Length: 173
Image (cartoon, rainbow, N blue to C red; front, side):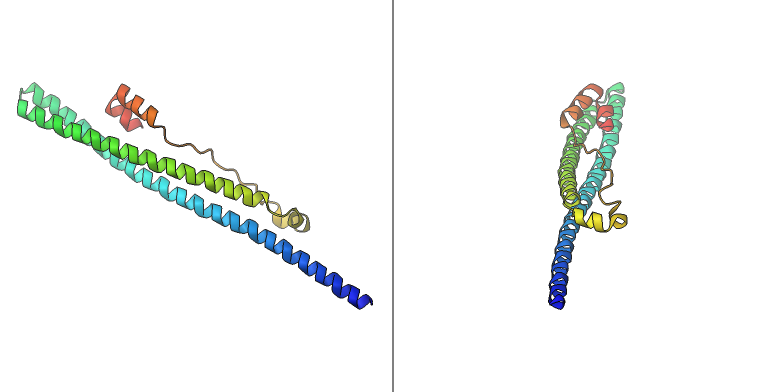
């Protein structure tokens, strides 16, 4: 009789441990999913940075065209002025397009990072208390990670800076 009771008790312990293992596995899966989302957000932020570098190069070209336009005006070269002005306007449009693309990428990355933050938070908060009690040293650091404050791009302030400071404002943005 005691042998059957031991077998039953061992079976119950085994099912309990398997349930605990499954709960830990679910938490780990959520954290891995969140990590994947953070990596996607990082990729989008890097892409936004590359687009921003392109916008900076266009901004420098635009400033060069503005100087050229002033030089042509000083020499009363109407054709040169008109040509430089057209190139500068084309560069301004290209810069705005690149800034818009950059802001879109930043906002997408921000949204993905927020999703990652939520998924990881859920994974950490659903980590079984029983595992923390049974294995306190192993579980001590779980969930003790500081998350950065995330912000998206602000298109309105970009336009305000650009309108007030011109190409310098665009470069700041």
